[in-house]
Image (tube, rainbow, N blue to C red; front, side, top):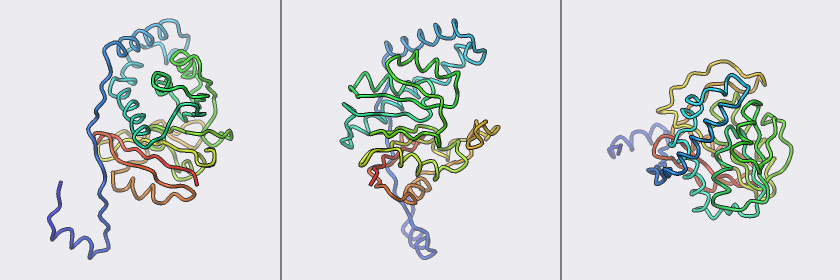
Length: 246
């Protein structure tokens, strides 16, 4: 919505800074072949898995939707647009979940190493089925000490008790000049409740932070020891940022 000039002037007089944020409509759609392959993989995994919470194919597919996969592809496209090559890079995904990110990265590039971190131990089995060539480690965000050229942290910060601390720690895990790629839901249309705190005491199963495009910009500006390369919105449903370590 475009604000009238008189309202803009009034807000500035009240000391309120107006921040213009970029929004974009998703240009990516999942091919029928890719969608079918993911469906088949999840069906086979759920049929042979011993963990009761991963035996329901429908629930797994409801989480890894075509829209979520398209979001992953669009974020990789943003990396490309910002001249962030993935070839030959040591790449990590914090909160790797089902590891669709790694599956797609291998379709479009040749990284030197892929490491996924997650505290949901049972999900690591599915991640290994999704991307057999990657390494997956049961480790919380704050226990990561290995350095990586590029670290992805998609749809994680909204769960964290202290997201600023989380971002600062992840920046310490980037190599010199390394990149941190973030995404979170757009808080204006995200209504997921917090749920219970997870066993690590540092995060919730649900969401406890809800950034608008404007507050996301303020949050990113509060980070020190890094440069903001790019940020914006995905079709008004998700927000992203690419940070570079100083």
